[in-house]
Length: 117
Image 1 (cartoon, rainbow, N blue to C red):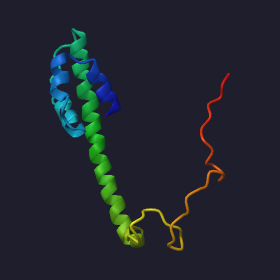
Image 2 (image 1 turned 90 degrees about the horizontal axis):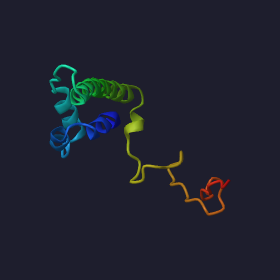
Image 3 (image 1 turned 60 degrees about the vertical axis):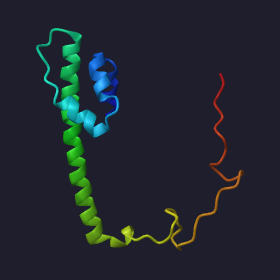
Image 4 (image 1 turned 180 degrees about the horizontal axis):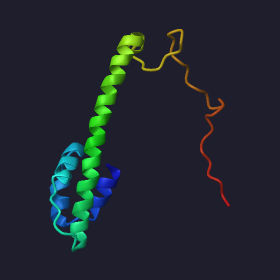
């Protein structure tokens, strides 16, 4: 989707306006439905490119949905305990307790300091 949106930046004003308030899926469907003319101008090439990228994005999005469904079925069948909620906190220790926040001196808690050179 990043590539598709980056290409839209260079598209004709009308196309940019029509995709401005759309969701990702709506943008992909809109661009996949574009009918490029002969490749004679830069606008024609952008329309062709947008259509090609959008069709790939939609195909991958469908594949992702299928794989997620397969993974969910597998988890329900083999490891249903992973789907049980044990507390309101998404992070717990193996014993069910909540992790303590790190202190300023804990390893890995140092602030980022850029190297000057």
